[in-house]
Length: 262
Ligand code: OOG
Ligand code: MG
Image (cartoon, rainbow, N blue to C red):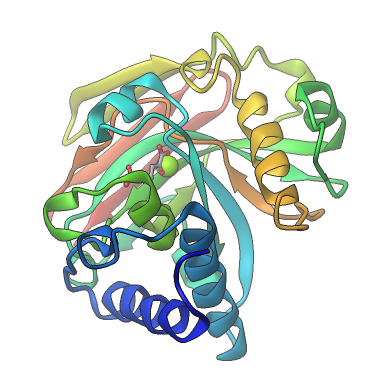
């Protein structure tokens, strides 16, 4: 740890204020180059506790930067995680107010809902499949609070891994009935295909990403809980959106997710 408790508190507020009020900030490592990974997670967990203290419910988790497309797009070489708050959640057909966001981008993901708690270390794909109640299609709306959507891994962790909104739709299915590796995804914006991919883009299999999340959380003595909604990470690169855009993502075997930015 390089940052003291008061600085961690200050930076948690710095990131969270920017998230709530939708304005850009400079990335933390510009001002605090000594920040460690532990500090970055401390900042994220502090903001999370502050939200909970104000009555916000944390309903799930997300993995990020789990695909080559995303790591290449963001210039970062390892995955990260973040939490999902109640007000991030939208359903199929939603209208998302873009003025409440900074520079949002959309990405296609497979979401997992657990029927049992899942704890690392040593968590593997088999544990994830056994603990999964069902999977569902999702589109995550990410919105880095950093200027020009540019960051390094430590800074993005402190900023809750760019979490902002997510939309669920389609169908809930039993993971054992699906081949998540070959499950195809087609993303359309205003009727035009902008990205496509398959589940294997996410660390070879999206369930591997959930295992990695459980193992990363174990480093802080935390576990994934039964009923939590977990985004396994983008299959496609993230696409910037503007007011009026209609997003429609078709998932093989899982139906589609559609919504609009207003
Ligand atoms: C970080 C979050 C990435 C994903 O699914 O890869 C993410 C970012 O690119 O802003 O959510
Ligand atoms: Mg994502």
